[in-house]
Length: 335
Image (cartoon, rainbow, N blue to C red; front, side, top):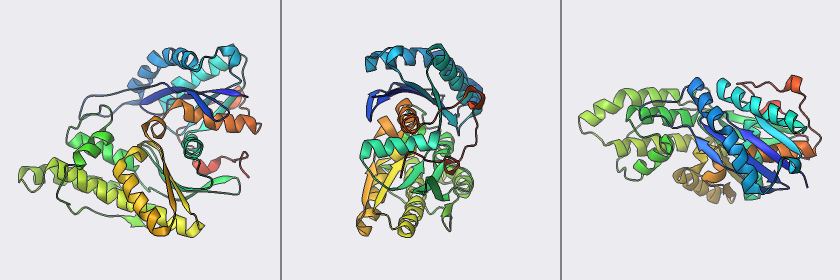
């Protein structure tokens, strides 16, 4: 019964998780929160991660009731993500693996989300909508690869939401996306915004530019409220995502849809996806904030799958990469 320790720190979340044979034993996490109207810079984020990662490691082992001798493998996020945070966490993972004399497994962050979603929900072969601050992809498994059927051609949907939150000076605690979601529930007017779907791909930079320019003017004239803008932005970008997911499901003949990534926590997105799935006679699978948002257990779970399939990462190949596509990884642990 292998137990795998997983380190995740590709953006402003830092997590250490422990998974043993499909059971999450521990999954503590910290978030680097910046003031309203600001984002998080790589250097500052890395300093935050370095300051808390050893405490998180101790917390994870204590929560799991394990010691270093009980750990069979150390997994870490190789990429994609922000360079400095990735590197700061990878250094700790490499050091722990050498100190404890454990094998090391480098994990693709996106595949970590997918494998965590499959484990928690029980979805067997879903079409995956992966939506986060750094990534927006529609994915399906075929012939030992997670194939990307559609994606953003510019910025991720989570980045679009985060940057709009800065325009309205919405709090980053616990996250700008969560606070936009709460404000959107009070919105009553749908403001027409650019809707950009190009085949299987989507574009969010145009809608962001439009709403950044129009927000203060529309709010100043009383044409709408901040809540209306949050509501309108959510409805528009989520409709785009549902459209390309449904198209991918039709292409694959899929009867399952799985939402992963931090934006996947959004209840309104889940409602819209559920409606689409019901109309197709399909099932929707989603997780809550414990597993949607970046966490160490998802890296541990993907690492567990890879470890069981014989994957090992030599130190010479354990560097991080900010660009690491989902379909670059050979998925040897699935039929």
